[in-house]
Image 1: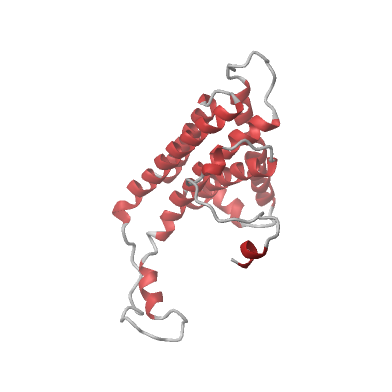
Image 2: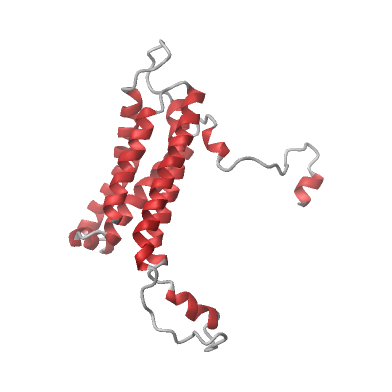
Length: 219
């Protein structure tokens, strides 16, 4: 708190605000916009690589430096920086606008609406991580008894054998996370679209399609 006390210009403060309120504010920062696509695209691709049934896809991702890996890397970058932003921009451009200006998709519109995807990307990663966290939860018991790896057995659980835990709630928990992310992004989209005076419908449809793909990959 020293910075708050000593700042001569009152540039630093501690305030209360509603959770994720900053996401609905108009932005022209393209780095923040593409951060959303990186979160979204990486979660989808990693879910396909680590949890999907495609052996060739896994081999290409794991064999770093091979020809197949360079193809995989190229597809990875194309999805994140080309395909996902491209369909997003197309959806916004084809939507009727309340404004009669008829202008195309501007940086302000693209950046502001893209940040509404951040909640969805965050919950994509939560759902993806649950696949590993819940399955390997039994390791937590062993680690609690021997946190430093020194052979301790503080709580008598250091030698607990690994076994999958909470597998019955994995699919419902992942579904809840993804649906929650969709609702969160939809509400954020409505606020952001109101700020830049465009329809929120294409972004909400975009989020729904992305969520459906992630549900298919995980479940």
